[in-house]
Image (cartoon, rainbow, N blue to C red; front, side, top):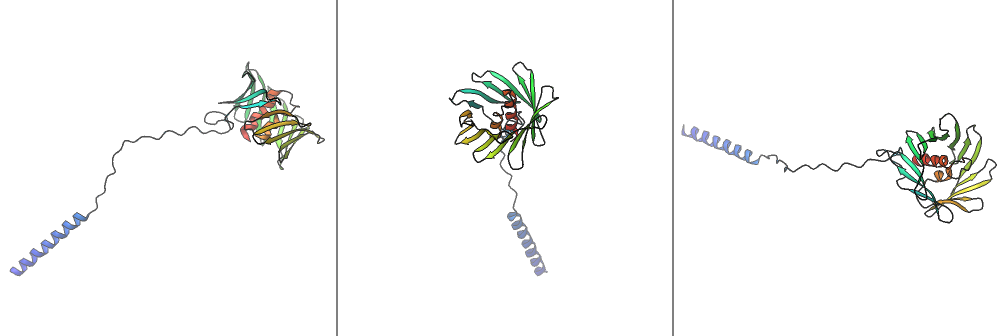
Length: 232
């Protein structure tokens, strides 16, 4: 009887010891320290090709154009809704308001002068009423471009060169060269004289648009150059 009691006592002691070791060895999760949560600063608005703050311009800074003597002719300045062209004294000449794939050209008095529209890889200049297509600029498969009038007649060939572009008439007579050398982009005439230049960043085909003498209104040429800048 004593032996049975002793055995039962040892069994209970063993069980109690095992439970204590199990409890002591149990891993308890540790709560992370409580800290004040500070939200991260919001990311700045992204900029794309449409001109608003959430969809800003591809050119962020003013592009200043000069003549051969180094005098400022005019500048293209980005705006939230497009761009504007100003003279050497910063007086506004014309505004370019972007609306989707359309660029509205307005003078300082808010009169509509014309439109530039991009569709299917083409850029079209239209009159103020959007009833007549005046010019069409289109890239070719080989990297060249061409400018046609509203009836589809070829006006200029804009040929890709290692220095930039060469502007030719339909008979392939050279009219202008658009060259980029070091930090300077220039339009040079057939005598290799600088007509217009800039040291600001600009897309070459946009620079070529300013040499389109057949588009006899600078406001329309600059509008075409602006929409090209926003898309190329």
